[in-house]
Image 1 (cartoon, rainbow, N blue to C red):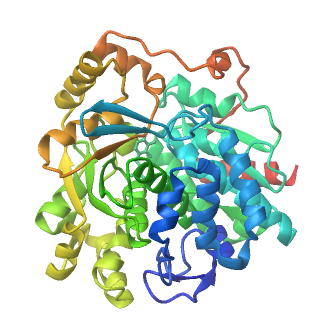
Image 2: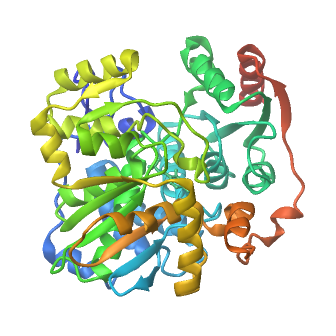
Amino acid sequence: MRYVSTRGQAPAVGFTDAVLGGLAPDGGLYVPQAWPQIGRDEIAGFAAMPYADVAARILGAFAGDEIPAAEMRLLTREAYATFSHAAVVPLTQIAPQTFIAELFHGPSLAFKDVAMQILARLYDHILGRQGRRQTILCATSGDTGGAAVEAFRGAKNVRVVAMFPEGRISEVQRRFMTTASEGNIACVAVKGTFDDCQAILKDAFQDQALRQAVDLAAVNSINFARIAAQAVYYFTTAAALGAPDRAVNFVVPSGNFGDAFAGYAAQRMGLPIARIVVATNSNDILARAFASGRYARGAVQATLSPAMDIQSASNFERLYFEGVQREATETARAFEAFGKAGVIDIPPGALSAMQAVFQGVAIGEAETVRTMVATLNETGELIDPHTAVAVSALDHVRLDGPAVVLSTAHPAKFPDDVAKATGVTPSLPRGVTSLADRPERFDRLPAEPDTVKAYVRAFADA
Ligand SMILES: *Cc1c(COP(=O)(O)O)cnc(C)c1O
């Protein structure tokens, strides 16, 4: 399986290079040269298989012969053994035709774990084979850092430096990073904002000497392995609900569009998905784009669902590339222009191809709160604000057949907002209750690129 860049100016690479490379050298995103196909009988068979084995099958289809099937099975079994639920991604019913897929049973209680746990093992495996060691630098405003630390702690060939803006993330989010005791993890509280952290990250990746010295890597949501890993639960949940004989709808709380694009990938691989509803908070760039054909950046607003406070959804470039029938020159033109002007007018043909699958809905704060309350009253289920955005979206669309809402965070990850809305304080699940007692370890640094870069270099050399 070869991977091509959405901008067409980078050579095609294999799976391992696409995974380690992240962004393509021409600034584009890697996509498979052709979507691998999963047959109807096999989809039906997924209903009776352990999650980790379905993951090995789907990821194996993307890896081709670069990772032996038996090896992949070991990696996925290890990755999903870290989840606290035997089904890994269990389904809960909340209405006659409505189900919630709980993606939050991983170690950091957010759906990022589903992809990050296997990504970390793929990295360590590939780097070990190549005799290489990398340093991952990440800047987090919430869930990504915790998921990365949980996934990579103890990795032999990878060190992680996780930066976060001091005092601007929740205590639970901070503790998921700072309580890791393994020596390959370093956490940095930056005296500044998340934007300062991102500026430092950008500076570090542009510093060729540093990149070479520490073999710098990123694990952001444009990494294709994350998309591949997220396609898995579309298959397992649809199979549990009767696929391929019954088409299933999905409602996805969306920020960077990685999760929703994974559903598109599953559909292209042969899974009968009726519609994918993209639910956003008031940062509604995607909802506006699917409705109007104009993909236009707005000002970012802080909401109750902070992981979705995003006004340029990086994975949208992959869908655009498919929408314009893989015209890389047009994709490069559109996204280079978006980088400058912050707007793309989607060509009519591409827009109708997108609308055949996707529909966007934007949900405000008051409705998010009302939905948390109503869901608790009607079903006894406590849901987090991100999930509530998606449950709310169901009231604005007409769907045929069953709908699966992807639940992306455990309510205990946002205890204050959930308690304020519902009057019920969610408790941490078994296994993570010790989070508050474990000692924290992190360094405080000023928001200066040179200081942070020197820190990264010293940590990688140690
Ligand atoms: C990251 C995240 C999202 C958004 O996922 P995308 O793939 O960026 O669209 C939604 N909810 C939670 C809790 C998240 O952490």
